[in-house]
Amino acid sequence: MLPDEDLGITEETPNKPPTKWRLYEQILQIPYYFVFSRYNNQLRIFRLIGNRYREQVLTEPRFWIPELELGIGLWEGCYQGCSRLWLRWYNASGDWVLTPEEFERQRAESESQRAESESQRANRLADRLRAMGINQDEL
Image (cartoon, rainbow, N blue to C red):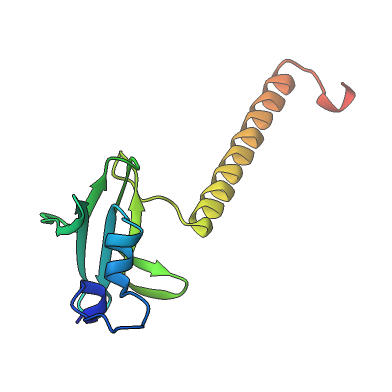
């Protein structure tokens, strides 16, 4: 269940700060407003049209934001040791934007593959030199 304040249902109290909904919608005029409940895994997206938020119909658990050339959607996986559904950015190809940990892991794997490839190349070269009767230690 989402808190009433997240959905603009909370009444404003005189002499109190504006509600979150009013702040985003009318004062800051944030173009998109995302609400995700981790309790029921519900994603709701509102777009500022005119001066009011209008809920967007989601046909899948992803939403493309053309102005950003990015999308946001629900991703199931493990992040910081916790496995569940998470909100996550994705790119124009539909691929999830890597977390810093994933980026580092991918970079390390790529570096390891490059080193292995270089090692295999060096071994092939050494084999060729030996086949030609050349001792590589004398070069």
